Image (cartoon, rainbow, N blue to C red; front, top):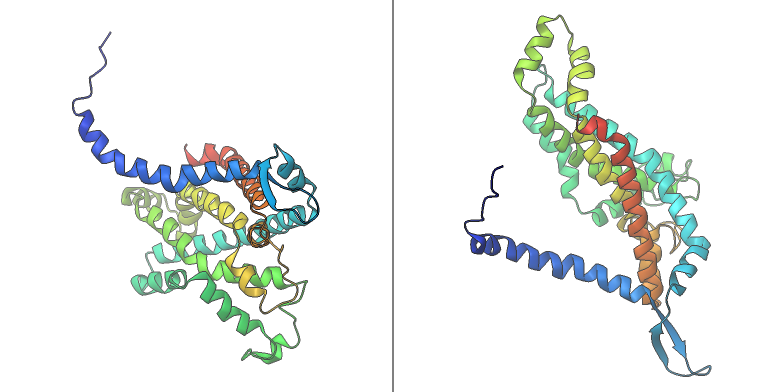
Length: 292
């Protein structure tokens, strides 16, 4: 039985790991702990006009979260959003990555940059730009926007989905394309020798081999969907259909501005747990393909 190896330079390990551990604790662990602690507080007043005082309230705020109909509606809204937008975005990203990786593609460097360029535009700027394009009175495409109310209650969610897709499809494309570049050339040569067409190579070779990258982008997209904030916040200036509780993060922002920090913290904790459960479930269901 071999003896465990003794760490030769523990001080060097501490020097390299210490700065990261310190920043991780200060800017990740500590805020989470503070949010959990804040969510257990409740505001108490002595008399009708007495000074407000925060006291320990146990699970009072979490009961209020579960009873809040606006929060449940916002969760359902972003789940519907993600069920449609995420597959469409990842499908387009995969298609663009496959086109760039095609041996017959020309100008791959230019189009790779062109597809990724929208990600360099801040989400707020992109939302403002698209908001003007959707507006019936300001859009250069008035014949379309005056006939189809893209900012109305029925379509504004999908108008926001278009903005998110436009911004992030290039980012996801780059992740998938990088995974395609990592596939050994011998795999393609063997497929060509077997008489496979480019379509068959893409479907039977490339897509299965980049499935871990697709799943990774799927996890990122699920997390991003539940954190949707900037685009709905901007669209409130263009559409009356986007209320202050349109998405969970927007409801948290509005609640904290009231101010009601304990309830906002409880919203945040529940939302974080929901994000973890959805992401973990998705990864668990797809891990056989991701790590085979």
